[in-house]
Length: 239
Image (cartoon, rainbow, N blue to C red; front, side, top):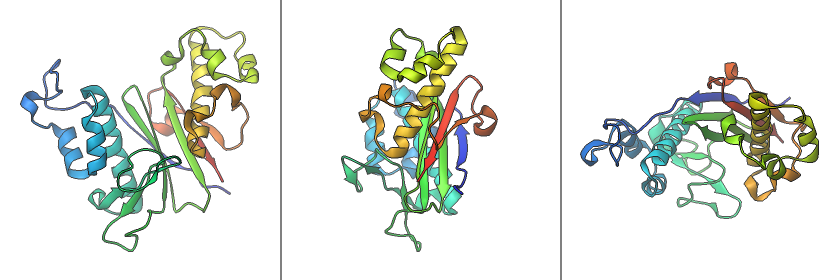
């Protein structure tokens, strides 16, 4: 029997200590609480990636990485400051210079030093919210993926043709308005969760992937995630 992943959400955080409309998101270039925490806890490769972003995306990226690190540290029972990133990308590999792909950490100063920590992780962000899933001490070969979406982003002509398989289009017949957008978001989060789980990302054409009844996928209610009820989330877990 597969374990249930631990799921947790984190609300939006903006660059703090700044007046509205300030172009840098903070006064006089002084780091606010978010960037101060990032400088204290995140690895150089993460900070370099954040430095190339505009203030809004940077805030979302930093808050997500901080939430993920603290979540992982809590589950591993170690201080967050003792974690170093150990991302794995199917194309780029792994190493100190990799800050994308399947998330993971190594733990310094412990019996885990020099090896990947025994923790599966997956992260997704939407509308400023971050949602994380984790499986501590996973069995070999276990895979995990999570996704969250705002249904309002599914409101454009042509979505069904570029995103949905034939059976999924049939499932949506007769729906309109909010019900249609939530149904689209449900299918899209299931696709993203499945593709993250396999490490494929959108290299697989989404319209070729039918996720209506795929084993290992589960819709996540707001009561379980802590996300606002207007967001839609799904998780995938499979060996």
